[in-house]
Amino acid sequence: MVETELEWAAILDVSAGTLFARKAYGWPDRRMLETPVDDSRRGVHRRRILTYRGRRLSVHTWSMRTGIKVRTLLARLRRGWSAAKALSP
Image (cartoon, rainbow, N blue to C red; front, top):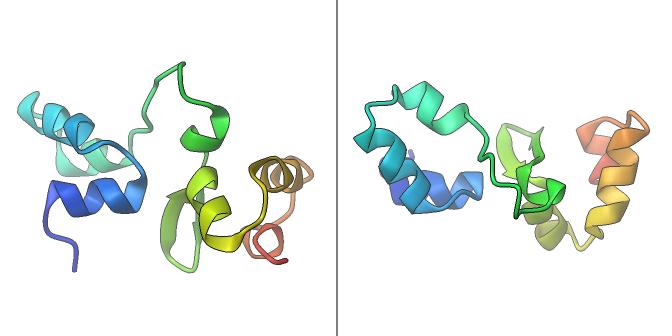
């Protein structure tokens, strides 16, 4: 079970500072965790969240875990592939 902002930050591929700031501003937990980071300096692969088997991770993180290139994953998703199909080798 996830209990701390640091653990959520690692799971969601968001900085812990972002989560701490949101909490300090009084954001409800659900909003704090589900609102994507709006940072134009980061690429779409870091903002795009993909849910597969109950895990919500950025395309960038899925790419690192699966070995599939980010641009390949993004192209598959743009073609309408399901998460399961997009993440298959």
